[in-house]
Length: 172
Image (cartoon, rainbow, N blue to C red; front, side, top):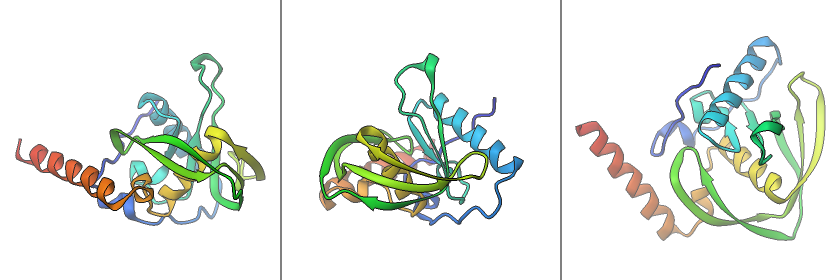
């Protein structure tokens, strides 16, 4: 089991746009496996490759609540092809912004096209927590953080807190 460190705000890499995966091969699957183990270890319910410093359009998600019945999903080059007009609010957090939770409003449902673990074309319709999670992770692939969905005041307050913590860490 390989677990990698997760990038933390204000790391500038979190704002970079990820590149499409051109070939799904054993190397891609090994990276997905590492991402999945890193996500479970954190613990979290979603992880984008950029969060471990890899600028590829890869996402792993597992919104199952039972550790004994895990249901990991692997998304390669995910793309939202439809979003509902109906919105829902969830309190979101992020492994790259630890111990920070804020309510975010997003489309309640979405449809996503992607390649699966084996490189096969897939399309799924998502609602509830899965819809929120996949939108959150696809945002990561585009250099967008959940903070960007908050008011400027909240976003600035949280960002400044992490910049200050990083500075103090550097001094120590």
